[in-house]
Amino acid sequence: MADRLGSPQGVRGKLEEMSSDQPTNRKPPSQIPSDMQAFNRKLIDDFRANRGQLTGPLAGRTLILLTTTGAKTGKERTAVLGFGKDGDRYVVIASGNGAPSHPGWYRNLLARPIATVEVGPNKFKVRARTAGPDEREQLKRLVPYIEQQQTLTTREIPIVVLERS
Image (cartoon, rainbow, N blue to C red; front, side):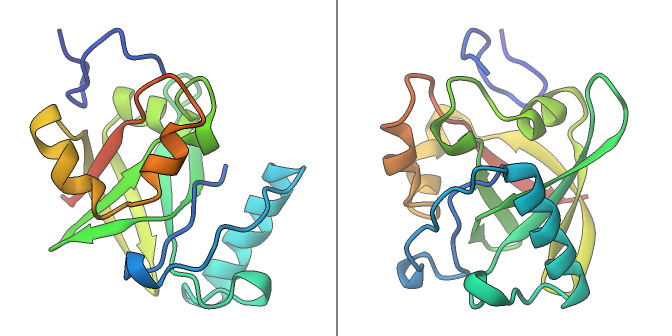
């Protein structure tokens, strides 16, 4: 049986590995800060204040902001994610930096697959779905850091496809 994003059930479920628009030109990942909530809040504020152009130590990186609706709370939650592109589709991984369970934003998308993406100065609605087994290998090339992230956890890291809705 599959969940609402198409993942097989039984696969367990803030800052993801960062990517540039061109994965081969990606800068090495930054060290994970001890207070991720404060770090992400500052990063989100910087992103929005500068129309998607990051400053400081993350200058030159291209990230997206993904705003989901909380599965339990109904409150909006924003995650900072690296991504790959496949035409008009955005591809992200639900790594949680190799955490043993899926990140909150992914669980939110399982319950409510409509979300908002901010990339550069653009903001738009998307419908999220988990890539099926037949797509994973093709999509992995768009997020090459998935291989390194997968070594950090025993759960299969979901690849999520975000399509404009």
